[in-house]
Length: 301
Image 1 (cartoon, rainbow, N blue to C red):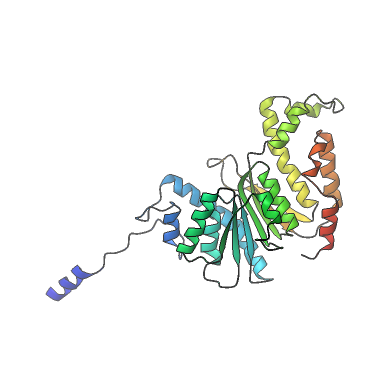
Image 2 (cartoon, rainbow, N blue to C red):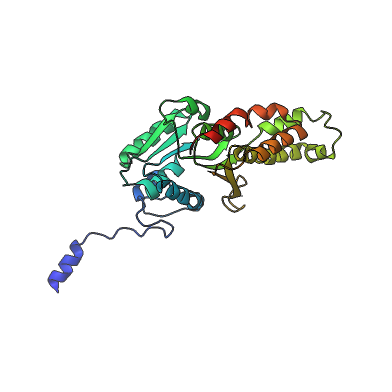
């Protein structure tokens, strides 16, 4: 009895129980570094919300990654407007970690201090397949630090025109998939406001954005409609759904585009018709189809 008691006293203390939301095999060190988990393995309400959102998004992304994997092992993913790279790190931890197949996640972020911190964290955690670049989304399109072709592009709450730049990047990189959660889109609303007095054939449609609040809301809505038409005009199949419930975020529209080489003529015509009907012709350069769509149709994916 004495020896048994002594052995019990000398035993190592049990590790604290993790929050039930944490998935088997996840890096506790990563979740602590991202301040999702406390040092004793607990979650506060804000962290639980963030983790739920990223998990929910992962449910949409994982099948896309597995589909790419059926064609080739080395997956390239670019996360635009990466911020602290919550999404990139958790994607790597849940899917890419330990594969050793040459897959790589690139985080694109304009704030140099966040790029530096993410680079240091990836090294600390031994996540060799992660790279972070101090670039704007537009700059990344021409950067030689990225491959000529990318499999999947994500942009989570990339503000205003950064989402359009991410789409432009994905189209030029011939991405097979795009996963977009648009945020704070004000450019189209500003054009609607500027052209509010323009004669649109005295159409009753102008009532939709006559009041300033409606201008902002309708501008945000039509921006995403134009984005979806643009993607369809480049041969993508587009699915629009909710990322999380309304109780978590008002910016919850999730756009998933999958390249299927679909017919381009009708969505191209519809896109132009919407621009003309709403007096947004000047936005045609941003929501483009044209030669790039034709070239894309000829290129293998």
